[in-house]
Length: 313
Image (cartoon, rainbow, N blue to C red; front, side, top):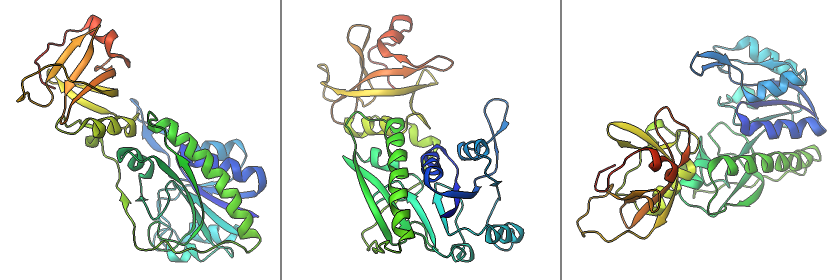
């Protein structure tokens, strides 16, 4: 089939590559280049990079609203696509765009809808300590992630899995599920399963979400570090400076007074490691990063930096 693909980040690349293996991608729509890094140089999206490698025309409108993108809308209509495929594009498709392709518009979503509609479904699954997630391929409608389901594929989440590992497995599964759904669409056998009313949302992740609240239980802090690696990353404050906390594990708290304040450092040496009081027990920090330094095991950090027992994070 002739397909217009709409996507932006690395998650969408697996879906685009899957399409290129079986279908004719007539154009790619992706977010405009953004300034990034220390020099604020314009950076192309991962999807744009793949499209350019394959000689696929790339469009980067700021919006698809008719009032601001009439020319783009006309170009989109003239591409002659059978179906539009969307995967983490970052722009909503207006009603007029959704009605263009004869076989409709479909979306690759990184959750088992109706759970975790919205921008950050992989993060939400990890933050909530879920043992399972998955991919949903759905027909798109005017609302956000509310369309009828074509198919779903489940994926177990391992207990020590952080965002980068789960993200990559989800992206690969998304490409596989997409090809299966497109085969059904091509054969006019694609299901339309309503999502129902028992839904939840995954909000946009903010930089401030990374600050650790030491009154939280150990499980919540562990899940926070899993979900927010590598961005925005978890952190705590020490001597007025942020200290990034990359990996933690629950541990038995050393003997302490019952009124010990959450965030109190209970152990800090290369032998015992870095142990901090939290809401229900204690957390052992196994990997961290100081300002201007590389990520490193906490035991290595403690060989060169002094942290005193009794201090507060």
